[in-house]
Figure 1 (cartoon, rainbow, N blue to C red):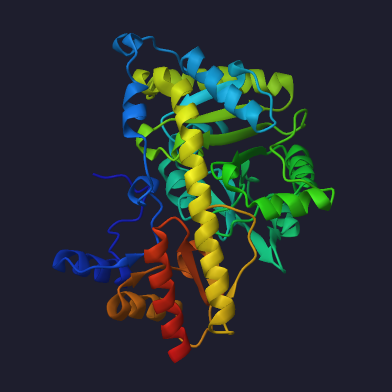
Figure 2 (cartoon, one colour; figure 1 turned 180 degrees about the vertical axis):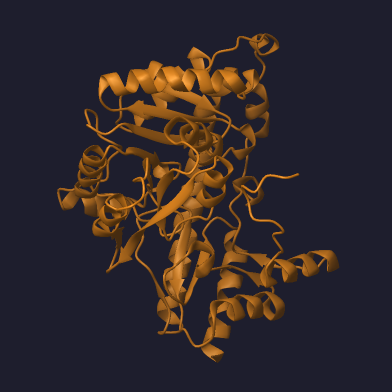
Length: 402
């Protein structure tokens, strides 16, 4: 009776079961997996957000496949502020980044086709691809003092014999959870590789506003700055963003796709997307009407989030330098997460289970993101600073005990 797109049954793993048990008992826990800024004890301008919707236009429905022009103009202004001029006509609004992927997978692939995704990375692509009847093929991110794309691994996946090559290459810039951002040389190679293989490039840039100042400065000093995708590429490129991260407003459900590349490819892609998006028309009128004001309000929220991330990262660096010398924080360029490499004396799963069961600290193990080997803990830098400091103290104390 039911589709076979997703594996079922899908029983919860040991960590999920233990977490549910502790929730049922009402037990306190220090959550270093938090990714929802509205639950991170930040000061939110609730009245200003509510006032942004005080527009009589929210009462009227004007269906538009790409979204209302004033909202697309607001996104274009935001992109221009990041140094990337773009026409509102080349922007498509979506209800979320996940929906943007769903639209693009419908656009680019037929059932059974493949998309190329990074590993390690957030484990969402497998589900999004499967729901569209697509397969996932991976390329590697390699760590050698800093994370970078293993371009040879990517080329091998695109050159695979006996199967149809992937229809699209997905890059997350900066990546979640490694925090690695593309340098100009990597981006140029990506455009060249995708153009040569006839694969579209999907650049997920939801965390782009949260690049560490030091990483940007170092890139600039090297003459190889971190930049948004370049104009005039011979590869059809789709850049994704959304209010969820850019403005710290996941509750608003507004994302976007910026289409770039050769003019004829961009025109055809937008015409095809129009048909797909017109079938659903999922973006609500109120949030589109409020978008210009939400971007203004979001600048303050974004600044507060950045201060939180920088403060917790300093705490992490100070504690790991002063504590167990066997732990190290992997180099990162930005994002909301940090990766802590720990001694591989016990399996990651056993470590995170012990942290939750005995220390009331919840963290993500590296295997959750398909790290190629053990042992890594992925820590959100978003939580309240006092809670983050205490959770980190407990983690390091357990590691020191061996």
